[in-house]
Length: 114
Length: 111
Picture 1: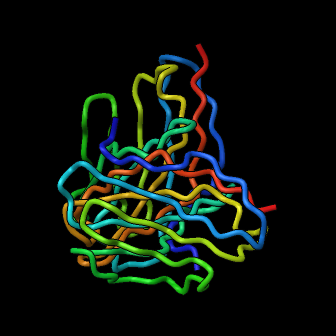
Picture 2: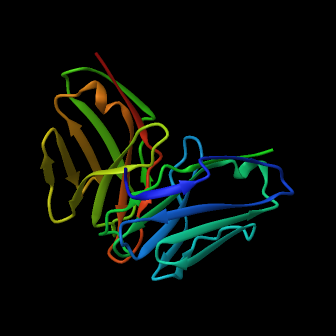
């Protein structure tokens, strides 16, 4: 148990659907992250939130919309996705931002876009 | 631009032998390096790290070596155990910047 939970664990959606991924951390951390992991590719950092403010957005298409209502919760709202968006979406948290802080990952949401 | 590279997608080792996982990076500004381990259906978990001021860090069966001139680091697991079978990710960072991950190496330790 890493202290970071993600729901749902699996999601299949059509290209016209709207869905949301949820992440919750129980570690008292103040930074949260969304990553995308496609097969045989590095983890791609999508968004970083520090103290509920977005501090990084790595040129992610607008069909992905993050939301951080408080330091324990992070959402990723999805709409009009493409089949190439099918991947494992990982949430992580850390005590602070910056590379010195070990990140704790959730189990991920396996997303399939049909 | 893939700044952290793990060129071996998979590695198979006999139980009890040494596993050596390799990682190369291109950005000389990276000064902190980490290894994460990932089992199926779980998120990556932190394994071991090393600062650029060191060339070796050891934690039990796990040792990370850093060669800054070659921009190369490696993870040694001795002795390897079947429970070590997982995907291992290398990550690198600069101070106050976020981590960049490699694509991972799948290690299989055969009994």
